[in-house]
Image: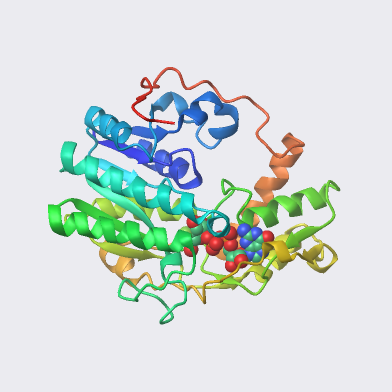
Length: 349
Ligand code: G4F
């Protein structure tokens, strides 16, 4: 049975990837922070239905020693590095922690793999934010990077580290340059989930206004479930490489808003207000991905349309709210004690 290790397993992508890998017969391990173990109801809601089938390890991206120990113990066949400070807007507020966590975390993992599991296949979650002030549209694997945020810079560094461990040390290290991917499991701070959760609240009479920043910003939005499948396909290739994963279509924030409000027969103009707090000091330009290489070499294609994505998110938020007024899962998550491997405390936070 193949073993996979996922960093960021409690996040949107980690939860879908766990489901996919379990379905493929993998033994799935995840790295989680100690705070997640201490507060599973709040931090593990995306994977609570999977907890009895997962093996979780406490470690910190900031601690080389803790990652080293987990890798040495698990000896995974595949490692998916998804954990990061991934909210672009926050990276303007705290550049230092974004750069530290994201760059060092990737470096610590790669350096540990080289020592204790050099045959493990490695996936790095790179991002379309690396293209930033884009040099060409659509973007491909050959498009030069010009990041516009500390987050984007940290992803370029992670991408370069991954490539260098591949070239210098022969690691089977691959980067997926993923465009925005959303789902009902998206964090509330990201614009899509902010919109759909507000639409549900407004429909239920629990809110009236939706404050937003730049409505003209455009993104290439896909469904996270499709994108984790691409991650897995990348690691099934004999040769490590880099791939763009995108739908090849862009939509504006306003178009997302219009569709989301239309799902509940409301007029967005009655509710959306412009709020300067949600504009960014620097915006990326038109992000539009050309995923021809992934289609050709991996046989990957997105299965969910933009309209289906918006509708799925709105419907899920409506259901969530009708179950629980706070919009959070009502039932407590089972404690992840059964399969939890003892905390590796060497510096883990
Ligand atoms: O949903 P967002 O915060 O996602 P963003 O910045 O595109 O980043 C996401 O996708 C990247 C891949 O390209 C990932 F690497 C990254 O980790 C993350 O998953 O913002 C989308 C757009 C932006 O242009 C933003 O300015 O929506 C605009 N926006 C307008 N009003 C807003 C808001 N964004 C947020 N979060 N909140 C607003 O009120």
